[in-house]
Length: 593
Image 1 (tube, rainbow, N blue to C red):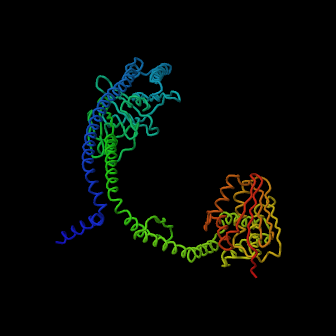
Image 2 (image 1 turned 90 degrees about the vertical axis):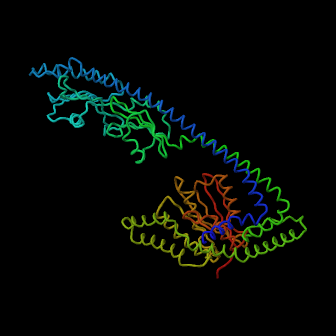
């Protein structure tokens, strides 16, 4: 009973938008008529394309796998024949079978013959051979030829590879070189013909790149994985592709035989075993790569279906547009009413009831917007500016440099000089944090600036020249707090720090009628003409109350001046590239007495 009630509620919820709108009902009906046959055709085409692609990929890769296996057999057979040519060489056979005690000169001659034989084999394999090694158990000697040269060593203990052959009971093994993954060792046991007793071994160190050209027959794609594994299921070489997942590796490590293919939920796994050396070639192709062609067919079908749906929607909308447009437009206007955004003006040509409602709604929204602008937005902007000014932090890089300078001054300067810098930094913090007023007198603002410049002069010594021209009659004029120091800080950051040679910062205050001009001039690198033009346009158009990174931006200063004194005041900037920049702050003469 409860299930039936739940299903009815769900159906009503789904059908509710359709029941409310004739336009929606018509659109949904026509869309279904167009979508169903399009989807059926698309799905059938996609499935047929996928099956055809899978068959083609499987047949092609099985053929490539077969031919690659044949060529790998030939290459390994060449290496094996080269080993046999060394073993059946008369000098090698005499050395292996000779049990008589010989003179030093005779022993030297025998060893020299073996060395020449191995050197010849080493160079016969061109660049792919990186080393040859022969161990003779009866004489406890190892002969080694590589790029470093040739040498012979006496070893009373049986070498690792001799024991490996015995433990695995094999005459031929392949193993990776742990010190260099780009090469492998092919080791063959040297056996006495009569009783198969192991007399030693011969090993070739070969670069895997020897087989890259052969493995290219497998058509190595960016998302294909090709690996060679030995008879124990160990990975020997992976010339291409991503690393296998644990699940994939569990499927391939025990594969033998072939050429054959295994299909899993996500992959095609092709394999073929080289019986001569018990080496299995594996290729893994993700199914989504095989299905890419079918995906393209599906995409084309979807595009055709979407075009049909769009045509149907356009026809349905056109049929109901003329009748329902005025009511729908009014309903959307009311539903999307936003007092913080300008409403689109109504069509004045309408003189019926809908037109009257649209006009009344537009007038009501305009009046409410005006009220919000005058009574709420301006106050909010003012409070935001006050809060931002009070919460402005001293540039952390400036603070870090100052603290580091104080630390060094403790050891290099007098206590009075160190205390003066600490006091300037303390007074800067006091000015930023403890004084809550939005406005400050020019004397207080200049005192804060002087503390900042005192620290900068201690940092840069004779390199920085700081001069001030102040009219004492203007010291009580009010100015937005934290106006001058951020401008000077910008002068350091954008102008002076990139300039070589001496720096200068000059502050001048002038009375012009009922205005005060505070001019901050530096001899920095200046501003490019196009950059200066963009900066002036931004300062004219934006009301940015926020800082830039860790500094109060010029837009912030302009916004606070305009909100406090009006749009006729603000900041003017003049600059010549490579000469310097002059920033003029214009405020009215408004005393704080």
